[in-house]
Amino acid sequence: MTGNGQTVRRFINNVLTGLAIGIVAGLVPSALLSEICKALAPHVPIFAIVLQIVTTIMFTVPLLIGTAIAFKFNLNPIQMVSVASATYIGSGALTFSSTGVQVTGMGDLINTMLTASLAVGVILIIGDRLKAFAPLVLPTIVCIVSGGIGLWILPFVRNITTLVGHLVDSYFTLAPVFMGILVAVSFSIIILSPISTVAIATAISMSGIASGAGNLGVVAAAVGMFIGSLRVNPIGLSLSALLGTPKIMIAAVVRKPVIMVPVLLNAAVLGVLAVVFQIKGTPISAGFGFSGLVGPINAVRFMPGGATGANLLLLIFIFLIVPFVCGWFFEWICRTKLHLYSKEAYIEKP
Image (cartoon, rainbow, N blue to C red; front, side):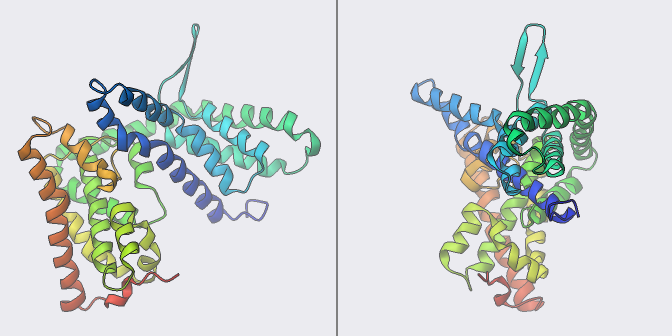
């Protein structure tokens, strides 16, 4: 137990859920609109303003994460804003100099999560001991203690996360096909778990082919859950798994994990294609799949020539045709020939 009825498992789950909520809320607007706005801004000035807005939202990610994590712990308003403030301090999003303070980005998301966890821990330890003095004293205590520790550990955590990102990139250089398969399969599993693919990709600055392979892994999961769900669930739920997030099928996966087999096979194929056709992305786009066309839009940016007819056809082939053909084939083999499960395994029970 961690106090206040919090088990370690519940504490970690609340932190991870809040992290995912904050990241998605802060990054989705930019991921969906930034590229479109950049292209249209020179011709239609209003899109330049929209670009500024979605970029500003992205810079608030540490605050959003702190707020979302505090909300998951059912903290009161003064406790919630204290966690948000401490999280922002420890995130590394601010650079201090003799000339002032500068916002340098979203900071280090791993350190952001750790600082938010420390802030919540401090609040749970203090409890209601401050009583009426809480609005006066609590923010100072939480920010100095938690934010201070966050700033202290920031250089160490940043070095670790940077190292992980470099390792992923170096492994792609040494064994690109194997790493393409590994990343795509891993992301197809992660997207069907409570963990956020976007959080992981952003935290370790996963870019280039690693990002593209991750996106295609998410595509494999979305297509696989759509194909299996379509036979036994309402069309709206199936489309939500395809166009929204396959995470809504987590319960079915937990009940019958073997339904992941066709998804993993599909992800492996797509991981190879990511390497062969040099499908790339950014740390922000990785983990979205084709939800909101985030994956394809970012992939076409890195293709020679940009949005040419040939490149667009290639993206349709890789992001739509291959995933659906392979998804249907592997699901059919696993269900009807290997008899690994029945179609009822995909039923999403209320």
